[in-house]
Amino acid sequence: MTKKKLDYYLSLPYTYIIEWSDVDECFLGSIVELERNMTCGQTREEVFANLKEALIAYITTSLDNNMEIPEPLKIKDFKGSITYRTSKERHYSLAKQAKLHGKSINTFIDEAIGAKLQEAARM
Picture: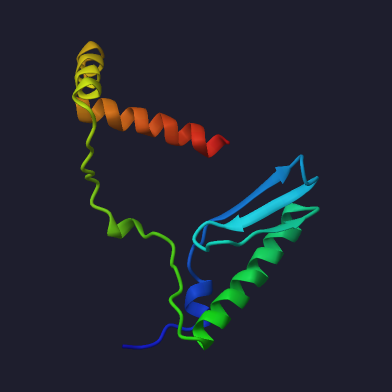
């Protein structure tokens, strides 16, 4: 097994979140896949540069200490099926709503999740 190197990890599509904080009066940023990381700056560009530096430091330290390095999720690792459990009351409500809209329960749930994901992406 070959050991992954810094360049490999830096080529991965890590998820960066940068948003304005009224409380802190600056942009705050973090990398979703890395726990307990956050930086701030007056511009998005400054925060992104800080996050890149932090990622390099994190990966370098982890490699030096033979620590596990989290990687972003890969679409190829997913099949498209989810086992979903709910109460019988919610199952009944889903079935009624799906029938009312002329859809299967799976289609109804998938569309509802899609709408919620779009809403979350706008936040």
